Length: 289
Image (cartoon, rainbow, N blue to C red):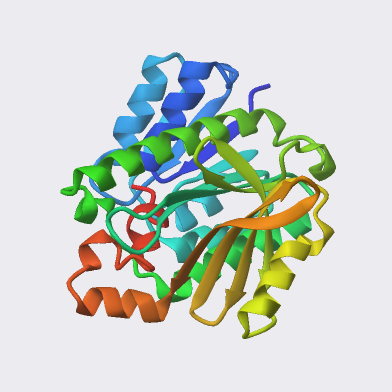
């Protein structure tokens, strides 16, 4: 008997994941799809695309967090425009879930990163870390459409490429949502930068000095991977790091801080069109549309 897949969010994020699943043959056509999105006719249009590819699908024009309570799906993909509902679903609906977001650093030419999580049944740690990270970002990043930054062609291209890469990753992860947490190769949570999906650890930030932060990041909770990522959380601030092992020595290769202060500064200086950019994460990324 086929299983029900719930897709939360039917705009650019949800559409990109759907395209990746269908193009890659990552889904059994005997399953059914239920798609929820409160805006316009997005869910119906995406459901039609699935149906045209031989997969029974239904589109619901309502918020994802209310629709999922009526459905009780077997698996879930979350690519929602707003962060709080995504965290709510992850916290309350204990089904295997794949989620994804995008984020941009400060400035039109700054890096775009992808964030994703593969939460299998019984993976309480992955579920807690996912919800914690998304809630923390949602505390200081206002819902915003990526439409606000697409007038800049560099922004638009970076977001398109990142969304496609992360969506292919999410499509592939559907095949392992029934696995045990320890069997998920490459880490349950990931930071995507360039061509690589780095295993991501989510931690509370301990020190205030850079030396303390650096020591915490390089430790990475004794992460055994040679390359990995860390997200450090404190009030109204999330910092992302990528660590690489070069000839036996761990070095920080990448650092992307996102904070309410920077978001406010960017907004006041007229840069809110690119996400505010600390909040810029909010534009492109945390906002997956």
